[in-house]
Length: 364
Ligand SMILES: [Zn+2]
Ligand SMILES: [Zn+2]
Image (cartoon, rainbow, N blue to C red; front, side, top):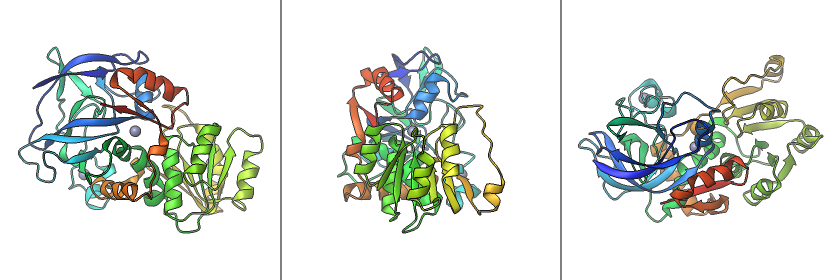
């Protein structure tokens, strides 16, 4: 058992408090990781502010991270002490119909909310359980199931590699895995935060043209242009739909909704062309609804599809993403707006909530 200090969510809407906790050693199928860096992600913000409910408290947040393996359980073979690993927030069983058919992010046997796959927690405080928000990467050390610690090449800076575990997987994966986009397709990305900027990069990787960034913020649109967007549209301009229709010559082959906003969904769906595919990546607030005309699916053979975690297969895709970063085909450093110490975590989330971050990184 190890004693450590980690930021803890004890009350919705109250911010995080650095608190002393204990961490049990890894069980047979688990891995102890010393964290190097962790991304400041909207999913954590939404758990903190209650936009997305359903998690037990107290909770250690953090769904995007990378680090070095410190200890492995007795039946772990594929990960070794000293390996550089990107953390996946979707552990999987490797045996169910989803796992064996290449869709491990849909695995039913991953982990119950707040727990490791065996249904218990490794964090405790005063003898009582402290829950894991997925891999709980804001703790300086964390224990994850071995399917959630993916070894990558060692020559990649581990702080940047952290982003592979959520923003890159979700954004690049939505385009290259989920959407089925092909060379020359027109793609519009709605929302240019960490996930959307990676979707823009995914669109460039598949050879899409035009690649249109849509956002409310000029700085993020500048960054999208730098990362491969050929056009930009302000989502709040009164003629945004007309602009999108003109650039795409009547509607896009692929629209990527990389923001959890219902209004943005309406806009993305309207901009999806005949035969096109609209991919919902961002999670809208609990309880929100929208309506649309089913004829728009039928007559134009449009497809409306969901993408969770970019439909990735972490053990295959993460090392590949690491190669693309190392070879310069995927740019990560440009997306890092700020690096923070763990003590500044509330400041980091205030910056994220205020729209000031493409990506923030907590560096341990
Ligand atoms: Zn995330
Ligand atoms: Zn499974």
